[in-house]
Image (cartoon, rainbow, N blue to C red; front, side, top):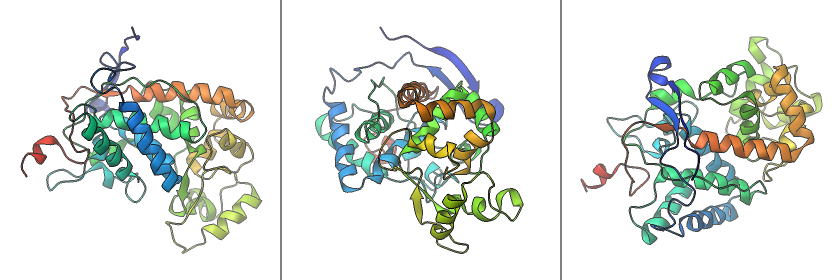
Length: 331
């Protein structure tokens, strides 16, 4: 029987006015859908594979959804809900708007599952399966996902704004944030390695190039040759939506991300600070830059921990990931 984790992490209502989040995985298990929808994981992987064949970047985008969902009141697919007149959605939160993408990929996986096993597989579980599959299909490690989550009945743009870190975040603030979820500095560095795949926007780094910390100068923790390339990609007054690779191999899940940080070639400030801004995380970055296997093991451990963050709120199995079932019944 899987180990039951019942550790209460912390009450966001005490810190940020959000709901209680626990690491209580009592209802999660490997093979949760083995009887009710035995092909669930195969269906999700097929949808992710098809999406990545159309657009390789969608793998990284899908993987990010787990981070942005689980950190905000637990892994409950609240990030997938469209806004309503009475509920500002998390999609429009500061860290998500014009940034999170590939929601349609989750829609495709959900639609396929509804055809095969209607009303059985939650959108929250789809996110966790899809994130794992995006890593595997990009060349990263495989792991078993524990399933059995429910979907939330609401979303909170305010909580997302309060919780999700900025690309400008420094190592200390990131360590403090992750510690509130019982995630260690090693977990922080390993999970930041999700940036082994994907791209970032110029909007997120122009301050590093031209006005780091209000100095009117570029970030000194940046390789000059790399900065010149980014200057060309992201000139002052240029299109903030232009994208660049988060590491030198943005379609392959490997440890190049950490090698880049050691060479002062991190794209985001919140990445480079793990090497340049904190000795404890710097040591972990150096280890992962040398030993890809160590990174893979720590990444899997971190993804499992993060995937088991849960809200204590009552939920449901949504028929459409974008709206709660009660809203569907009105049509």
